[in-house]
Amino acid sequence: MVSTAAVSGASVPASEIEETLLTPRFYTTDFEKAAEMDLSAGEADLKTMLAEMQADYNRHHFVRNENFEQTWDHIQGDERQAFVDYLERSCVSEFSGFLLFKELSRKLKGRSSILADIFALMARDEARHAGFLNKALADFGRSLNLGKLTKNRSYTFFPVEWVIYAVYLSEKIGYWRYILIHRHLEQHPDNRFYPLFNYFEPWCQDENRHGDIFKAMLRSQPQMWQTWQSRLWSRFFLLSVFATHSLTVHERSKFYDMLGLDATTFDTEVIRQTNDTSARAFPVILNVAHPEFFKRLDDCADRNLKLKEIAQSNAPKFVKFWRKVPLMTGIVTDLLRLYLIKPIDTEAIRATVR
Image (tube, rainbow, N blue to C red; front, side, top):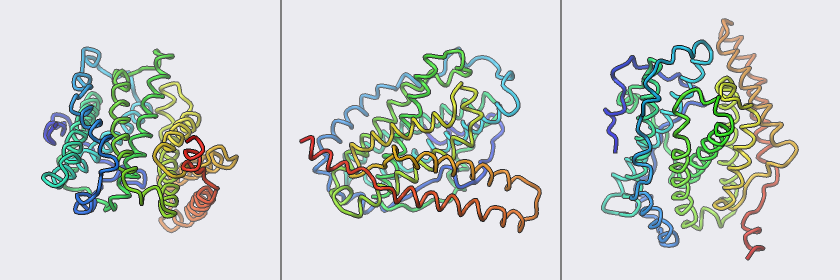
């Protein structure tokens, strides 16, 4: 496991992360309840995943090579800022996972040995990713003081069930983001403007493996997929993750332009693939083929960009507030309408296949 000090990047000026609704959060949970979970229904799958994690297939992959030994001064202006913003947010997201998994491993040690071991190895992966990203930031004269971040950031409490839903989706949508960028750059190597992208294939393997672990945990808990409440929660977390993804991708459209990708097309494909993948874990998935689905998500993303413009303007605070109200109302209304679209019953499909 990489220590906090090892990924703090103290040799270059440390930067601060601007707090917004889309900034990755740090989470905590009910560790006592996590320790008491009955995992017998998923034990075989978890043991398989533990063996894969112990094998550590990517232990030699995240090593910087000579391709990084150059200056990146040719990336300037809006493009440089867009890429630095991408690196910072990605680093915070990975480090957030590291902290959660590390604490879960510590609190579950001696009580749920298989989960304690798995979470320790997942923390290893997340720390490895965060450290690699922070070194990339150093190439651009920036870094994140992750030790300071650990102490100063507020932590959001999620019940164990919410953690399982949310982290499963986070890992799976991460997989699809990385693999789709990797496939695109294989076909368009001239757009690979920085060597970090050479590591996206092993990176997505880690994300996929982590997601499979949380899938095994989810399916081991009947209340998380056999009840009417679980159907509502599945829809909620799917929509929350997809909406956050759409807003974030459109905020970073300049970064995707640099890769030769259209932000809207990329966002749509990531969501479609993640939704399909989630059918293996969740009792329902969203009907993303509905004619209103992506239209309303795109409308939310457009309103979010306008909100950002208002926030950055020099208008008085009360003027900003009243200009924001109709935009925020529109986002909430669109998300509610999306939530009410009839979902696809994956359990019924599974029963038909059997």
